[in-house]
Every structure is written in structure tokens, then in C-alpha cells.
Image (cartoon, rainbow, N blue to C red; front, side, top):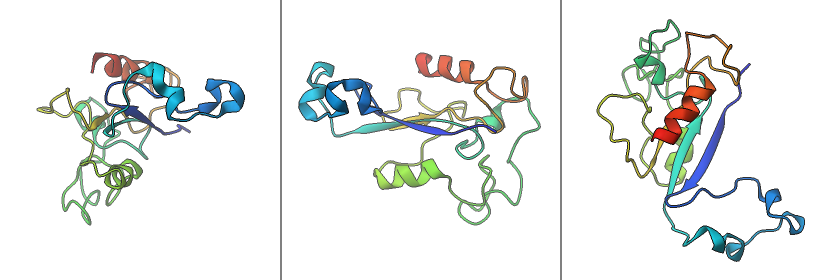
Length: 150
């Protein structure tokens, strides 16, 4: 079974998610981040995961693992979006809480990859290993490469 994760990224600098890496008992405050440069109030949401987090990337690859048909999306969006849900996903609620718009799938045609609000790299059915459903999903290595090319 795959696992999902959200990574929060400052607009200018990647901030450590696990404060334990800071040393000193894992206690960090604003001064602890000073060497990363100026902190901004704006955050971008970078999303990795499986069907719990995929906003529709699988719609744009050659696979049978898709949610681009009814009943998916009927209640909230009123049309299928590629989300394996009748409505919003966990990252959609996190984005709403952070006062961000819905985060689009990385592979969605026409999106600007200079998005300041973030991007969704999740792929339904994906796992951490390249061998997981090979050829049917976007493997973790490819998604990481997409991140570095973003």
C-alpha cells in the first residue's frame, strides 16, 4: 500500500519538516532558520502520494488507473476531475486552510509550472518503489525528477 505525504515549501527556501534535524534537542524557532535566508509568509504546497492525494495526474498518462468518469467528482465539482473521490482530497482541504487555491496536477496541460502556490505530483496507485505497478503509474523517482524540473 502506498503512503501519501504533503511537503510544505517556503517560496524561496525549502524548510526542514522534521525539526529534529536542527540539533539542540530538536528545538527550532525563527532564528534557527536565519541561515536559510528571509522567511516569507507565502507557502507553496508540494504534494506527493497515491490516490488519496492525486488531483488528476493519472488522467495524462497511459494507464487504466483513472478516475475520469462518473461518479467521481459529482458532488463537489459536478464533473470527474481525476480525483479518486466524489469531492475534495486531503490536500484540497490543506490548501483551503492555507488560503491557497486548489493545487493542480503537474501533468495538467496549460498550467504554468512557475506556480507560486504549489503543484501536485501524486499518482494514483503509486508506491515508493519503481517496481510498484510499473508502467501504470508515475513512480517516485519520476515524480522527484519532475519536482527538480519544476
